[in-house]
Amino acid sequence: MMSWNIETLKALKNRGLHQIAAVTKRVKGYSYYNVQQISDVIANDGKWIGNPAMRISEKSIDWTITIRKGDIHD
Image (cartoon, rainbow, N blue to C red; front, side):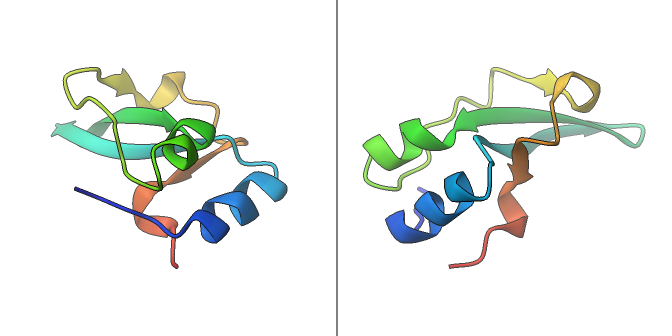
């Protein structure tokens, strides 16, 4: 299970980010994501609780408030 440092997550929130997006599927160069609220991850002791069955197209994500999972570095 993916887990992050709580201080890192709080720093992301202080930068104005509210969501984390993880790729769950790629089809013909198009990506689908599972999006998790940073507040929910913090409340779950830094553990990712997303559901990969809940896929959202990349065009539906507000990338001004969302960070990709792979871009988070503790």
